[in-house]
Amino acid sequence: MINDMLQVCYVIVSSGWDRHSQMAWVSASSVRRQEPNARIVVVVEGIAPGAEDEMARRFRNVADIVLPKSADAPTPVAKSRLHKILLRQYLTGDFLYLDSDTLAVAPLGDVTECRGDVGAVSDFNFDIANGWFPPEMDKPFRALGWDYPLPYQMNAGVIFMRDTPAVHAMAHEWMARFQMPTTFPHVWDQATFNSAVFATKVPHVVLPHGYNAMVVKRNYRFRTARVLHFFGSVEEQRGTLMEHLMDRLDTTGTFDEAAYDRSIRQGHHWGPNPEAWQLIHSRNYVRAAMAKVRRL
Image (cartoon, rainbow, N blue to C red; front, side, top):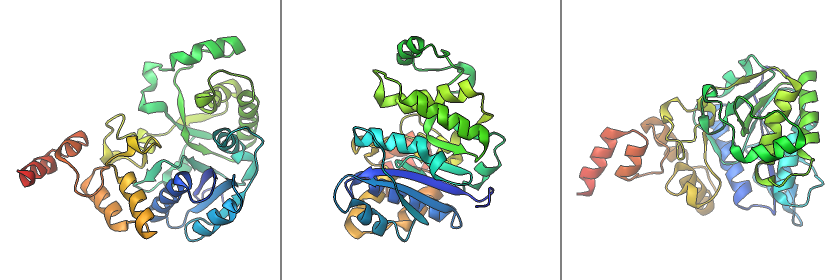
């Protein structure tokens, strides 16, 4: 494995060809469109008979490697997060981990040039200068004697990791902290990632906000985005390009390249024929005005 080759990784724990694995397929297809020479690795754990074989078959034309693994955790969500932490043990070489609810909309290869051993984006694209860290983490952090508050919280949905001893040590510490008891399991992988990074002092950098463009929640400028990061529920993806691509996959079994390319060309994260209010939200004011006129 050559360290400057872009390696992009996903984790899927599912019953087969379900919504989670379909989102990962759509996301991986978008990466393949932007980075045709990237090495795409999908770590899978099936929770139904034949699920891993089904996922391997579905990903055959998108991923380079489908890697079956098993994690000792009580729920599919916990298994998925455990596999994410174990990626550094599973894989050789540097890699970029992406959550399944993401879309690549620009080349990603520059991430391999980041100056840290770990590169991650600030959660919700908050600026580091604001020193934001979620207040609900106060109690568990203090109870465990961990530093609090940290200068910022990094999002665990987009992480670049180098294959260095310092990163392996950080990943080991991340695992140890993740396995400690807590009353906040829904965000514990992210909180423990932040804590492990700062506890081990692994060289790390903040990736540009474009690698975590939460265009729906944070009204982030699409035209500087590299990775669109949606929330995974159907409701929160309503009307978006992700919803459209998922619907098209369901009806035709294909990736709608035309709609994907058009969205990027027009500079918005909505599906075909967006409403005027959606275009205003994505700061496409001229297109919004034209859409209003068409609907009169």
